[in-house]
Image (tube, rainbow, N blue to C red; front, side, top):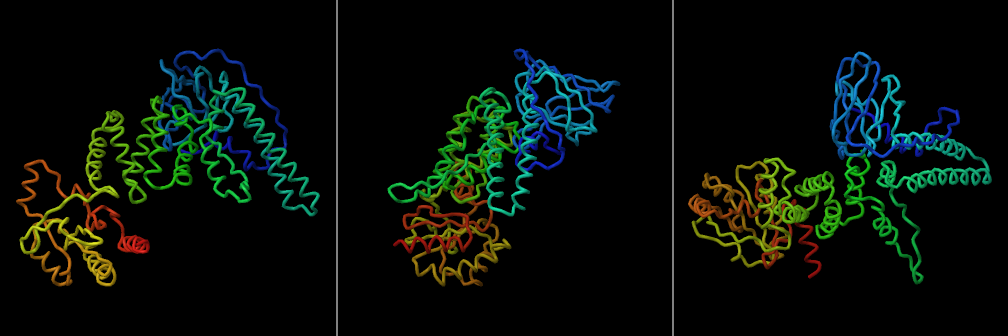
Length: 493
């Protein structure tokens, strides 16, 4: 399915093509009665007949079907139901379910009629809907202003005198302000309308000029201002914002990308506020909860899995799992249990495993400025490449900085190959250990979490860097990233 007619209309004034020269006049919205129960939307859509058509809506970044109707021999049908649909931007879908014929606004008033022809997809006639009347009127004004502003841009590019340039700039600013005033009038006159909601969600505050305070420029002020006003007039509990394509979802993504520091401790308060504000929204709350869960269950930056654990502890363990199917619920709980014990800044889980001589070696018995835990397998292709590289870095630099390596063979079924790899690659300065079958069987018998779960060692190689107190400094990074962290820490000593 394709095309975003309403989106294009809302943004038209930004890049309006210079086409029709016919001057438009403002269309006054029709008066409507109080919204009635349920929905009843007669539609005539030519030339389709004797077939099903569909009513769809946006849901975040996706599209869903909300209703269907059979078109008779006269191309007539009715979308109807005892319950109202959640307000938002909807669209009519072709019988093949592959084409969006046109879009419309749907809010509290869901008793109106539609007449359209597929050869004129941009000109459906919608009668009895204040929301669509408002949008049509706005579209005409924004198109007219947009064409005028585009013409001014062209003239400005070709201006030959300073006076002409100033005059054109003044006219451009004047036209822009007129369009802004028109939007503000809609917002003031119809504060609860869907079009007002769209304006508010689309709005991005402009950064103010850098102020001078006590003779010094406050360069951070524009950033603080934009962040503080980013969500002005947007109510997170309003389910309608889910059905505003491109706007709400992308605005959230931009907010966390540009205005929230990537540290988990900065992200968590922001998410807490959003979810608390959205709590009464039956659709928006679960959507946001799942959106944030998906984002931070596989985070972009090290340490952000703490955000996922926050969501797990605050919501999923307290019963907010009704939005999930069984498989998703199982995945979330298993993932959380694999992350709880290995958070950045927390003590590393104790490990006592058997070395190449059959002697038990404890992680916490290692006395070192840094300890690198390496989970590996001699048959792993990536390990064959990375393990020698780790040792090269260790011999060249890390050993002199007081590092020791605690290397764990993650299986127990091919001890000879494990020992052979150690010998052939001269890894004799590492502490090499593995877990015997008997030790693992004992853990299973007593329902004790194994080290693979405690360290989330699902793949090989997996690396952890610990400080002298065995607190986790970093995890699951590249050799070069670990080296950068160690270098920076030593600079501060």
